[in-house]
Amino acid sequence: MIDDLDLDELRRRPGIGYYFRYSLHRNDFHDFKIGDHVYGHYTAKPLYGRLTPEGHVDKSAGFNGDVAVIYVPLEAGNTGKAELLISHTAPKNIQLPTGKRNRKNPRYIFSISAIQ
Image (tube, rainbow, N blue to C red; front, top):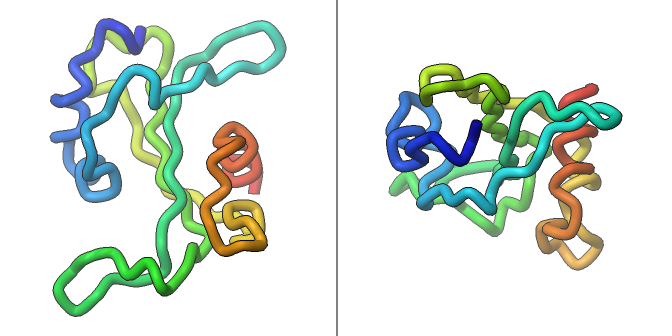
C-alpha cells in the first residue's frame, strides 16, 4: 500500500528522480480504480518538450504530450514494485487554451495517455 512505502526511496530509484525531481508526498498519488476495485496508486506529470543547454526544463517549449507516470500496485510491499511509465497523449489533453498545465484532472490525463 502506498502509505507504507518510503517515497523518498521511491524517488531515488533509477529514472524516477529524473522525471520527478520534487519530493513525493502521499497526496500526490491517486487511486487507480476500475469500477469499484482499486488496483494501485499513481501520480502523473506532463513533460515539457525540451531542455535548455544547461539541462534545465525549458518551459517556453510547452508540453509535448509526453506524460511520466509512477504506478504502484496495491500489493507492493516495497518501492521495487513501483513502475515508471512514459506515455504520450495529444498536447491539447494536457494544456489549457491559456498555455498552462491542466491541473484540474490528472486522472483524465493519465487515462487518456494510458489507453493511447
